[in-house]
Length: 378
Image: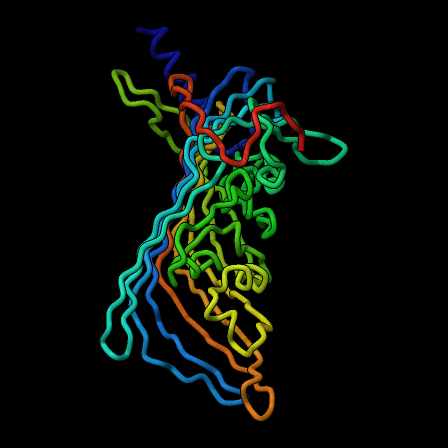
């Protein structure tokens, strides 16, 4: 009993000593480790208004309303080929999912209700990719593991999906805060880079998602201002595997305060997706800016001993203003004309990381943009 009390006392003293110390939150992984990484993003948007701006006149609403709902999912199994410390340098990524679904109900001023649906998918879904970090380029080379796919499928990819952009620059104590780089926050919103999700169908809603409204952040995240502040809240026990006994780890807790504005030029994509009826208009497309705002909070849980993220939750209010400006030539004098749509509502993002050692690989899908004759490095 005396020895047991001494052990408990020492453990308690060690815990108390640590309570006043700093924690190091750093990525690390052993060769052969497999991690299942799941990303789910949900948009629930009201159509606040739609209307037009003619010449120098103010915005004129056409009374359109309704709602837009969409979900974007990405799931990987990453297997590290080398021991990692600070950065994954050599790994294989199996893309289990890369898709989006959405639906909208547009209510016109006349009372007409138009329900629409849209789906999007990536040619990289159920493909296996190889990544190797190239120190001189500070980027990853990437290649199909078994086929020679077209290079344009790989050029927007990034190897890192560990949420490293959210970590502090060094050891931290509870209460410490640091800024998160707005450009690097793209690594959080666009996991693994641009998977080139392509909407199916030519509906108005499908075109709206293609421009970026309720769609993939890869299409429109171009930050122009704002700030993201991370604050370390200390340690928390987190159950990572249920059972008897459950597997519990000590997680570092990072709270996020997020506020940013993004402004992207969608002119090229808009012109590419124009239907023939619009192409025949006696008008020229001048600008298609998409303004996006977000204000919210988040929480990152980081396995201190295991050296990797456990989960990230991000919630808040988002808003979109989509404007299409044209010059009309069917008037006595050329006239500028803009169509504008405004949307707002809640956003929810959930990312989880779990042991992937028992997750089977899915059969590789035949890629219509791939040639099985060989392999090509990007």
